[in-house]
Image 1 (cartoon, helix red, strand yellow):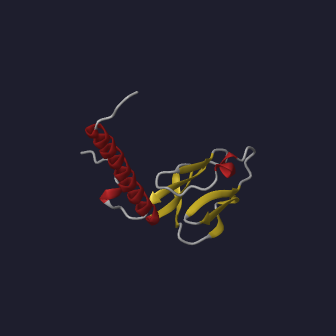
Image 2: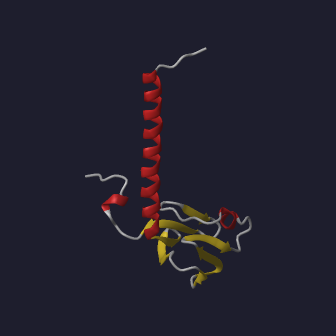
Image 3: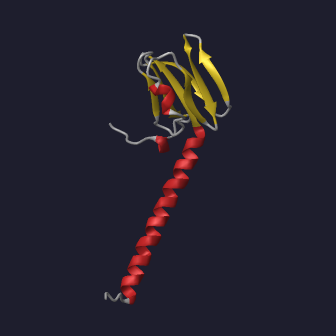
Length: 127
């Protein structure tokens, strides 16, 4: 049988508490950053519309009436599409900054972007 010393238990306890602390820091940071998000709708890779995710609604865009979007609980999804395979509809809701959903046959994509251009939202700065 393996016997643990008091120092071994102390080290294990410190490692567990450190892991929990890091988890909660990332959890709080991600939950606060996703409150200020919007959806950018792109057609053929060009930005067509940027829409806030704060209000629940369903809508279409004039240039692509064959596709319906739904915003619910600060997330967006392809609700309806005339594409044959419906992969975009089956993708479901996206709401975290950086997530993307794409309808390839119609060349339409939705990307979640941060509303504020804060330096805290940047991954890297290259000069």
